[in-house]
Image (cartoon, rainbow, N blue to C red; front, side):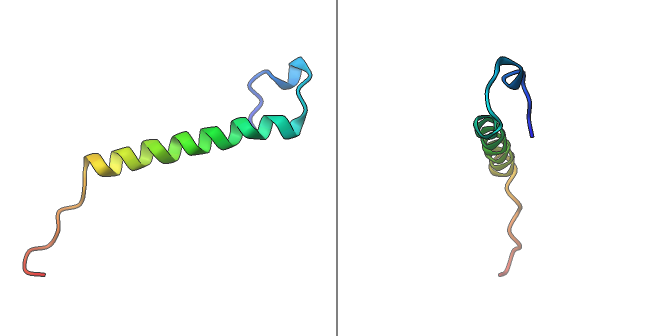
Length: 46
């Protein structure tokens, strides 16, 4: 679980998980952008 300081401010654990989801989403978007920037070269003759 990510605790970026909000739990210290009294935010409950179930509210912090939203931040966890957004970080995973950002990582997935960034990984997809990297894959699109460097697509694999297709094999010739297929």
